[in-house]
Length: 349
Length: 265
Image (tube, rainbow over all chains, first blue to last red; front, side, top):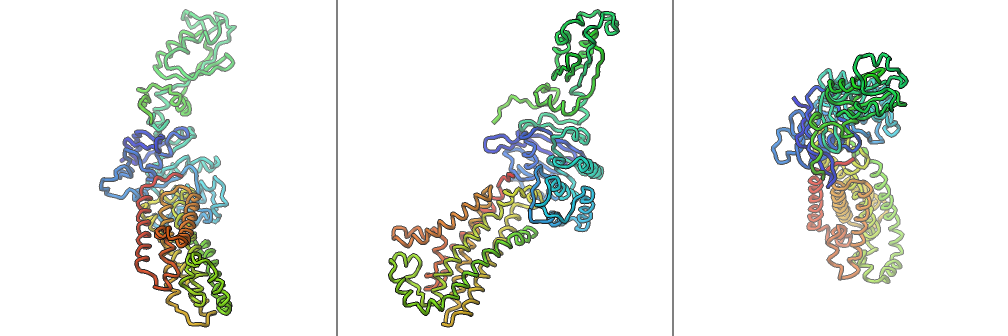
């Protein structure tokens, strides 16, 4: 079953873009990362799913129930009822200042009449201990990080089937972040679907099963994290042999007749590699080593590397960090077909 | 129900502040009445010396200071109406939009609640405070009369005046609620609500100053609950029906507008 499903979901604010034709499928039971820079449409997507915003067109379902975009249809379940299954943590947390944490959490619990009060309360106590939060403090005396903890507890305490977290770790110290992820993994093992947006790619890389990348309101790619990392891009690092190396050095004894001389300018000498299709993000360090992202055939890369073999002292080919993948998407360096990217040429606004 | 309860807790202090101030004023006005009545000759001469348009604007041509309820109607009731309307208009105008302004909408609207349920509970909280405000002022007025006024007076007229105040303040609260359902910022809501009440109040006074402005009076809720009218011919059922009609229409429109509103935080 799909926890979240959107079809052609589009939201314009007046004439300015929110999201455009978003087709998203989040299977139940996954931890799903949603990444993109500020203003890409992450929060717009989340707020449309929660019913804060009416989409301009398109539809969205949560656990199969339409939550918006079907104003005329007779709905089997009013859209707002689906929210009983959701826990939401907004990016910026703001609560009623005059309340104590305990009162706010009780207020939150009061909206879930079908859950046992007893269970919610014991879960609240448990989470407050995990996150080291004093329940008797007033909201207005809390730091940003502590307000975030309140947000996490109010989202988790009623044991939702779907957690929607908008940058859940921002403002939390590393210890609490680690505890949060252990709580989330535990929830996920119990079957909770987790949909979270983030800037911190390392956490997405570590915890998510799949990830969607959004840019300027459009979905660029949706894939398993391993696939995004593996099939798309490699990070290649080459340590150059010393330019004083003699032709009899081990590098040249590989046996291939090399067309390049090690004494020339390294950038010039490495030209066959640098001009190979699929190479991007070239970085030099002191003319002694270089690294670049490569996306394409591995044999083609090896063949080209072979041409410059005398210059190479050492080589590493590794999976890039998700951040590098992400940036390569943002720089528009990924072939549309390969990445399942929607064409970017169509009209904007 | 929990939103209603929360709003009742949240509105307690401002209710206390407005109610205590107006009750205190009412109490003082009724308290000084016997002294005014003793020197009423001089006072009536003073009133008579005022230009007729001005006396008409405050209903002084039809009610007398010599009558304790008349004095109450002119001195206390106009203050209760004006400040009560400001209080309830602000209450209504902030009740929905404050969740967006204070960014708590992301908490509340993520709960399994329909927009209509939110409007209903918040409107109910406003109704509770409008009723409590008018009830408290009514009780304090009656008690003050009992304590200080030795002449005979008609309790029924005081109650009718205060019923007029209830319907007038309720109308302003409902118009405020409609504003609140449409606006995005509390500050705008404050400005519009306060400006609206003051504008309609002065309209009700100026409309008496000139015959040319006669038609304008139908635009202001205050004209339907004028002290002079209620004291001479009782609270008019037509006026009450009209005010209730505006209240119902504004509340209904608030449901529609809020139901479709995009919530930006």
